[in-house]
Length: 398
Image (cartoon, rainbow, N blue to C red):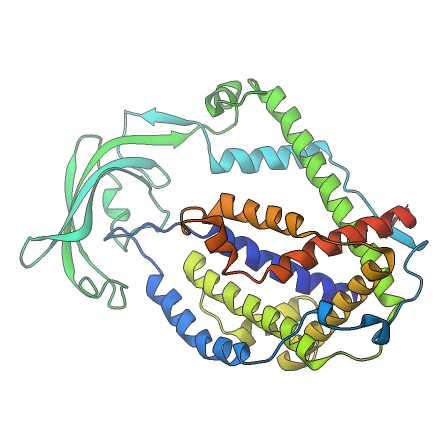
């Protein structure tokens, strides 16, 4: 039960994050993209989503849970959890990752372009037959990492050996399946000028830290100390989340649900299926990865050692999620724990201010598009978990 609860929660949280944060795409004439693939993914999932929307649904508040749920011991239980210890090796690993994503660059002036260099270029793309510039194929001061595969085949390789200030014509052909149909399979000429060449310093330094403009870290040692504090804060949050999750799971394990109402099951079925389908669409948008619902769920099951059919697995997840919500609400009812409308509005406003304020003219317009019950249940679950943790005993899992 623990593994499946965690898989379901992790999946829906992942989808919520990528859906809220969105993705950024660059649409250059020479750069590869996945817009059409995303559209195809959306089209493939629309039918199943529409079918799911036809199911009648109710919420946990629509039922007398005293008749459906028998609570067991939900307080005074023992919870096992372990807080991650932040070692020097962990700090160094975090430092390495941070530097790799944003290294200190130095100018190279005594040689031509090599693989791995970051070059600043101006380029113009033209059809080979008419020499007419095509839309989206021109840019100035474009930063490009040679060997990154960001541009069509031949573009980056064609710049190797070019010196600063030199201009070169690259005779290339767009792929037959290129997303822009007016360029697919076309012979083109890119006229490219190399403005500058840069390479990354091999190791992070005080100079690099200073370039970051951090308020509380001016040297490498100060930055390492800051990283350690951040890692420790993350470890504390993960530990707290694990303890809260365990408290809920123990309470759920000790309870009995006499009946799962069909319309309540439908509600969570729609949520889970919509989450999976949305996540698959985001895979197209963000990474260009093409997969189906069955393929994705099968991969998820295999990676977690779960056998059976996809249908049975999803049905099991939905059933468990429905029971879990019923039990959490039953505990809240018994203990007088509530999530107020003001708290729900505060949570929704956080999402609105962070991600959606430019997409909707008002907060009220954004809120009208949501099922606010989802947010109420999220807040209530956290409150119930915090209540349970206070009554339970937490021991080190080791």
